[in-house]
Image (cartoon, rainbow, N blue to C red; front, side, top):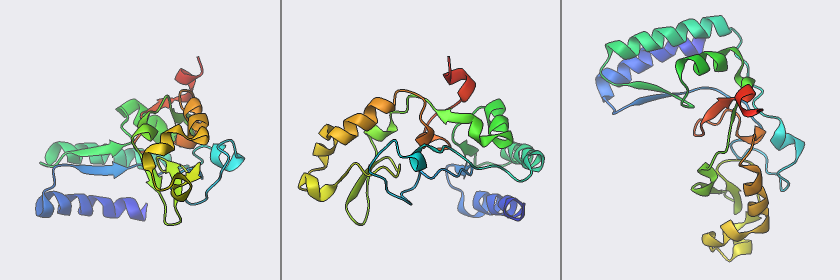
Length: 179
């Protein structure tokens, strides 16, 4: 809760002193498949399929803070948005149970490839290294034709634990997705 307490003075400072176009609050998540912390060459590796294991220590307190941020948003000139982009009821659901939301049919990987310091090439920021840029003779356009990329692509049209909690994708309730 200490971090949440310093959020309000920070938001007010940003609004009054910096005046950006928008303030974004990224919701926390914990997903081994996100952020390039461990590279796996098999997308089906259990480490990449654990999903979002984050949980808030005190969801009821966080919900109160969420309401305070919504009130603050109405009072200041700089709009505050939350990522991932969720409506209020889904945002409340995320706070209660972050693992209950997932990405469905995400297409962001088509526009986002990440090249890491060692040349590992990953879709989005998923820790699935499907090739190395050196193996492609540094031709990034060749990545989309790579067999492992195509295998990855075939899994993106359905429920995918690797994308749970991603602040860029559209998150949906798992129950909606299971039909």
